Image (tube, rainbow, N blue to C red; front, side):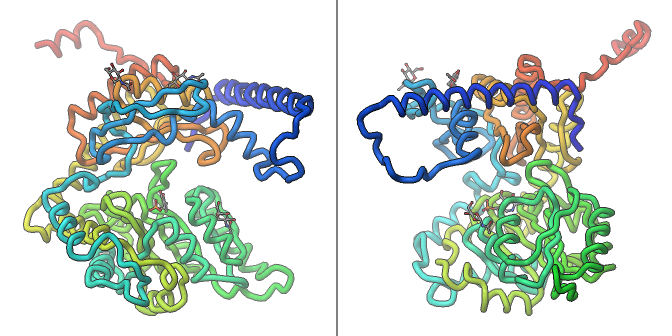
Length: 491
Ligand SMILES: Cc1ncc(COP(=O)(O)O)c(C=O)c1O
Ligand SMILES: *[C@@H]1O[C@H](CO)[C@@H](O)[C@H](O)[C@H]1NC(C)=O
Ligand SMILES: *[C@@H]1O[C@H](CO)[C@@H](O)[C@H](O)[C@H]1NC(C)=O
Ligand SMILES: *[C@@H]1O[C@H](CO)[C@@H](O)[C@H](O)[C@H]1NC(C)=O
C-alpha cells in the first residue's frame, strides 16, 4: 500500500495545479492568436478531432517530458542494451534520432528470465523454425494457420500451467480484450480488481456484462460486493445473474504486488463465482518451477477456472494464452473472433515459447531453467531490500521482480528518468493515466540475466539520483553503533 506523505501530496497537487494553470493560459493565447489570423486556418469548418481533458493533458503535460518515454533501442532487451541518442531543435516538441547509441543497464524490460536475448537453446531453434515456416502463416487458425508448432505449444502450455487444454493468441492484450466478451455477455456480472490491466477493463466493458470493481487485492471487499450483487440480481429485473466471473492478476504490473489468491479463491468458491487469473507478469517468473502465483502460494490450478497469461515477459516472445477445461477451450475455439478471424501467432514466436518452456522444465537436458528461476528470485529480493534500506518507498512483495519506486511529484518524473539515463541506467517511469494522478512512479523490472555487479551499479546510480531528486521518502535511521561494537566488528 502507498504511504503518500501529507506534505508530498500537497506539493504534488500544487505542481499539477500550476501545470494545468500554465497550460490553460497557453491554450488561451493560442486561441486568441488563431482568432487574430485573418487567413483561413486550415481545416476550418470541421469539428476538432482531438478534444477534451485528455488531449489537454497530452499537449501541455506529457509532451513536455516526452523524451522520457518511448526511447528507441537498437539491440535486444538484455541486461544491458543500446539506447538510441536523440536531440531536439524545438524544445523537445519533436525528437530526432542520431546514429549514436549509448550502452545502458536495462532496468525496464519484462525480460524476467533473460530469454529475450540470444539463448544457446532457444535462438538456433527459432532460426530453424523461421527457415522452415517463415515469419507468418498468412492464415487464420481455422483455415491454414495451424502449424505443428501451434498444437505443440497448446499442449505444452496446458501441461505447464496444470490445466487440461489451452488456446493461443497473437497478442496478450487481445487475449483479454477478446476472450472476456466470448465468456460472458449481457445478464452476466464481472467483478474486477480495481487495479486490473487496461486489457481486462477493455474486454469487460466490451462484453456487455455488468462490471463491478472491488478494492485492490481485498478479499473481504470482494465478498461484500459479491453478496450485495447476488442479493440484488440483475439491474431492474432483479433476476439472478446468468454467471459471475471474478478477474484478478497474479502480479499487479504497476504495483509489483502478489495476488491474495488463496483468500480470493475461497470467497469465489463460497459464492460459486468463476475465477479468471491473468498471469502476464507471474507465469515463468515466480514459483519454484516457474509455474506462477498458484505454485508460489500453494493454490491448486484446478481451483482457477480460467488461467490467462502472456508470452511477452518471461518467455521473451509475443502472444498470449488461455488455459482452462477442455469444454471452455473448445467453446472459445468455436466462438472467439480473435481466434477465428485473426492470423495465427508467428511460428518463430511460437518456437521461442516452446524452447523457453522446455528450458524452464529442464527438458533441454540442462539445469539452466532452475538456475534462472533461482537467480530471478535472488536478484529481485536483493534489489528490493537494498532499495528499501536506502530509504526509497518501494511497492510490492518479496519474490516479485517488479518493483515500483514512488516519485509522486510530476517534476521528479523527468528528473529521475533523465539523470539515470545520463549515468547509463535506463528506467521506465509511469504516470497518469497508467497510475492515479498523484502516484507517479518509476518501475524497475529485474531480470535473471542481471549479474550482481549490474545490480550494484544500478543501486549506486539510483541512490545518487534519489538523493539529487529527493525521493528517499523514508530515510532509514543510521545504525547507532557504539565505539565498542565498532571495535568488535573490526577484530
Ligand atoms: C496484466 C497484463 N495483462 C495483459 C497484458 C498485455 O499483454 P501484451 O503486452 O502481451 O499484449 C499486460 C501487458 O503488460 C499485462 O500487464
Ligand atoms: C529536453 O530533453 C532533454 C533530455 O532529453 C532535457 O535535458 C531538456 O531539459 C529538455 N528540454 C526541455 C525544454 O524540456
Ligand atoms: C556521436 O558521438 C560522437 C562522440 O561522442 C560525437 O562526436 C558525434 O557528434 C555524435 N554524432 C551524432 C550524430 O550525434
Ligand atoms: C477499448 O479500447 C479502445 C482503444 O482505447 C477504445 O476505443 C474502445 O472504446 C475500448 N472499448 C471499450 C468497450 O471500452
